[in-house]
Structures are given as C-alpha cells and as structure tokens.
Amino acid sequence: MRKNIVAGNWKMNTTLQEGVKLAEEVNAAVNAADAKCDVIICVPFTHLAPINGVISGKLGLGAENCADHKSGAYTGEVSAPMVASTGAKYVILGHSERRQYYGENAEILRAKVALALENGLTPIFCIGEVLSEREAGKHFDVVKSQIEDGLFNLSAEDFSKLILAYEPVWAIGTGKTATADQAEEIHAFIRSVIAGKYGQEVADNTSILYGGSCKPTNAAELFAKPDVDGGLIGGASLKCADFMGIVNAF
Ligand code: 13P
Image 1 (cartoon, rainbow, N blue to C red):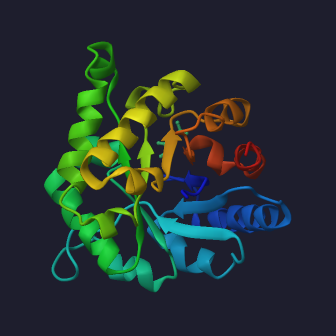
Image 2 (tube, rainbow, N blue to C red):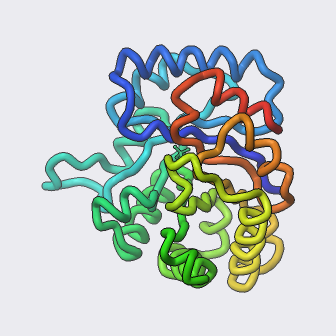
C-alpha cells in the first residue's frame, strides 16, 4: 500500500550553516519521535552533501530540482547524477515556482523525470492550478493535463516509483489552504486519472501529497482524508517545531 509522507521544501532559504543546524534539529526530532510516516527534507543543492553527513535513520534527503541534461556545457546547472552522488534519494520536479519563473514545461519535465529515475532518485512531481483556473472551474482539466503531459510517457513500473504532490498555486505561501474537502476532491480525481492509465493497483499505491500553507493546525484534518497521503511543506518546514507538528499529525 502507499506510504504516508511528510516532505519539507526549504526553497531558497537558509545559509549552509543555518541549514545544517536545522537539519540536525529535525534529524534528532524525527528519530526521537515515533513518526507514523516517512519524513523527507528537500534542501538547496549547496546543502545536500553536508546535510547528508548529519542525518541518519528515518530522515530522508532530497533536492529541489535537477537539470534536464545529464552532463556537459550547461553552466550553473546541477544534474541528477550529481544530486544522487551526494546521497540524496529524492528530487522535487515541476514545482509551480519552477514552472512559473523558470519556464519549465512538460517537455523539460519529462527529461528531468527520466534522468532522476535513471539515477535512482525518486521524483516528487508537483501539479496544481492557479487561482484563475480554479475560479473558472478548470482545475480538474489543468491537473489532468499536467499529469498526462509530464508523466504518461512512463511505463507503469517507472510511474510506480513516483510521489505526486498536488499544490494549488493560490495556496502556496499565502496562508490560504485548500479545505480538506477541496483537497480530497481533487486528490481522488488525480487517483482516478492514474487508474485510467495504469490501473487501480498502481493508483492505489501512489502517494499523493498536499502542499500549500499546510501547518500544524490544519495538517491533521487534511491527512485524515483517504486520498491525502501527506504533505509537501514550504514555510512550516523551516522551523523544526512546526515541521514536527505536521509530522506528528499522522
Ligand atoms: P507553503 O507551505 O509555504 O505554502 O509552500 C508550499 C510549497 O510550495 C511546498 O512545495
């Protein structure tokens, strides 16, 4: 059966020293807690190797992105093999901030997903609509297209390795969370889209996380929904106590 997962996305926050300190704190807390879910922190590239050296046991490590090429003349890019060589096991791909500010489209994302999988990384693949799309009632179509265009080239075996994250863009960093019912409605829809392509078993085994202003105060209600398998946490992952409050919501 699918796993429950709480993953932090630190985004472009913390210096290396601050990040290592936060990772040490989270590592101690996660390993002391009887967590009922997998816990992952996704951190800036510069922090990956040093943080891999200070975490252990139940805490997993991921990157926030990787390049759409394997190696070569791509100044400033960081490849999937480089990420894997730090010890990281996960990589966030298709985050709305990457789609919006860095022009990442389905073609680029397909290349990134393929390279991540080839290098043994588990993609945490993000989808989600913007406010105008939700207000126009197009959110189901938008997420369906994002899944079809970004992922449906994969074999069932490869698709089964992914984690999905539904992140309504209007809820990211805004303090405005989707209600638990809104999250459940679209998570169940996402699962049905997966089932339509890969069958019910693959769909039932796919973890679908919710992201967007998830906090200790609303996590339990969201995670109680049958198709919400955890959270992808931005702001609240930058404070150990808040992040653990979400982890302990399971
Ligand atoms: P916030 O939790 O800060 O809204 O960010 C969500 C997010 O984008 C996680 O990837």
